Amino acid sequence: MQCNISALVLTSGIPMELNLKPKRKNVGECACCEDPITALFKVGQMVDIEYNSPLGTTGFGLVDNVGEGIVIMTIPEGTFIISTCTITNVLFQ
Image (cartoon, rainbow, N blue to C red):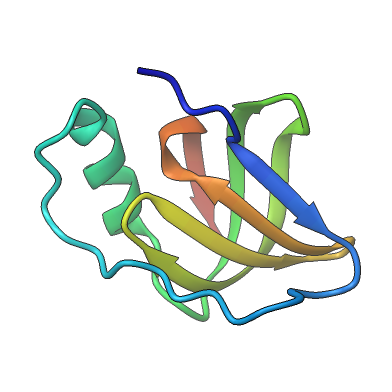
């Protein structure tokens, strides 16, 4: 199984409230990479990330929310929503 949408940039803010599933131990296909990466993120952290996505390969921003397999960040361009399956490296500032 492969994610169809791996990342999203919203330049004018989030048009609706996003209710993420809480972080939990995953038993699915992505558990081996998704759980350890998701566990690294804490709300309020400034991070640099590297990822594999058609939107690019690096990002820097403030972690706004973390859920099961999803990280929402504020970046200079707006709001960045990314699947943790695509994150390959995290650098904390």
